[in-house]
Length: 440
Image 1 (cartoon, one colour):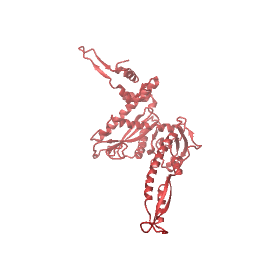
Image 2 (cartoon, one colour):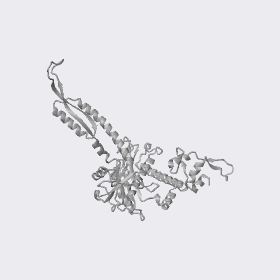
Image 3 (tube, rainbow, N blue to C red):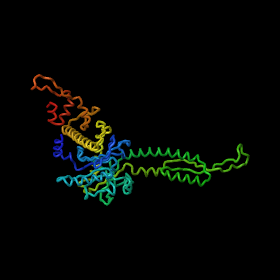
Image 4 (tube, rainbow, N blue to C red):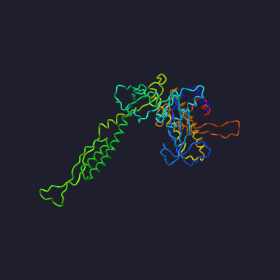
């Protein structure tokens, strides 16, 4: 199988593309692991758990995938508390060293998330190679660009994906000349605006409870009440608080007060109402639906503006690779290995499984597109992009029947339960697969 994959990679350049997509994830591992003296292996320890299992120790895995088939061509097992910013930067340096050893190495462009992008680790194309990454919204320059109105004149419609608009900006952040692509999505804006509205309403209810408790408090002097109200307004700029300080008056003695007796002031209370500050709300809405992508590849003939977006969106293929490794079929969370070396070896074997899985899935989908055929999915709809997992489920039930015979030279073995759908699936893998299953 691996020989066939190597041959296909050499023949089909799409299997190994010009873009390498990288990301990290964590896998929780049960058991206790003590580092042996002189043992250079990963440190399985506690750290930020992306699996939401802070009670378990973990290891970090780093994936690199490439091509239309999403072949994993780079794998590293790292310490459980390894920082993404540090590991992605070290990966870039390791990739430079590795590619220098190859005679016919492709001009690889590294695609990663915003963990790669920081002023300390920002890599110049001359030092390593080209990269595409997302710009963190915490950078001052990025904040200004995200505040640009979505109906401005600078926006261009994205031809490859009409759902997006974009405008370009030349940046020199971190001392590296780069292209910034500010992208706006109407769908993304609606989702984020809806979430923001819910959060504001939830916060308004919380503030109203706090303000109601504040109105019950009686202050001894007006200045204290005014100061408290002013402080409350400063803490909650998102809301417009229309309030005032009023006197609390009481008669000196109990019972019915005498005629013409003026009550005395015994304290001061705060009264008022809370409204949403529309100006502040609109300011928070301004950057919604937008994000910024950056690349140090300045040549648009090599990497066009729209290609920046399309290549970055392929980054989710790495997430699908992590989902494959964390699938319940593998039962990684329940594996107990006493040796760290065996844990690393297991991750490597699982990566090879992912390579075979993605290659087989790509081959099936390509065969369906080239032949114009389809396969039914879970709801009996004919499609040309089935997952290999669904194909495996369809192939369950195929058995080899052995018939006993007194004549040793006569073979009475045959494959049973070959339905038309299963024969169709087998034929997609070529002539050799048909021979193995005993039909032509």
